[in-house]
Image 1 (cartoon, rainbow, N blue to C red):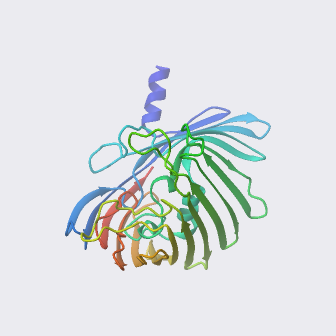
Image 2 (cartoon, helix red, strand yellow):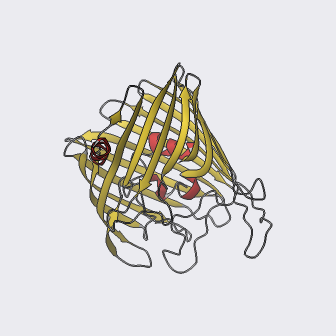
Image 3 (cartoon, rainbow, N blue to C red):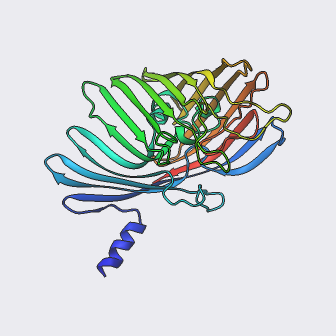
Length: 358
């Protein structure tokens, strides 16, 4: 009977607790009608899972160990609401899987975790939080291992006088010690209406060629991002500036050729800039941003984009949203209008969806 009662509580999303520990279930269910046009695939209409926020179910818990020390864990799995599949084949907790200790000197965790670069883009720079058609992913390099890394050790210092520090080191776990290795960090300041954060990410993408055992040497991909936002009360302004250098520093979201003709080339030396805002409007949130990509390679494949979106709150946990974005590519650039979970197929895109959190 005790086991049956515990199972019922877990399935119902309740919190299971005793005097020293808690375990809870949380998640997001998000689905949208998505339209895309301007690419070689022509006009595309589909139902997409997680256009605003990736659909997921997660488990998190803490245990008080005494003397200000606690243990914690997160296990988070992504899902596709449109098909019922997991969103990454061959995985279970592909979004986050970590365990750590937290105390007066900060927090240390081991496992699959977000990079400081990504958290800066989501929490500080992008008014869309890297979701919707207006996502910063349209021009900023926030795909693949720029988002999260496996085999990673992180340290987060406690906030002091408004300042915080975060460090991350991902082990490549290959025969060549440096191959696949990734590390980064961020330092931020948040007090009153102002938030400022500087993040850095470096990844080694040396891998053996087909049939070879030794890794092919490539220059490391390096991303530096400075972001800030300021809350005026009725409006919050967002800004970000990124510098991307090296191989695989700015991979294109759509690895295929979305426009036909000459195949676009990912930039190995570029700058990205964003200006945007969020504002409460009629019981919801208005989001807007304008971005520019300055490709400083000989190809000069620049791009400019803008996006607008609106999330209408039906309750604290449920909202309806719509969003639109357009990209102007130059000199054969291959940037596509993405959303939170897809890279997109064209230069124009829109979303009409619903999101529920629990």
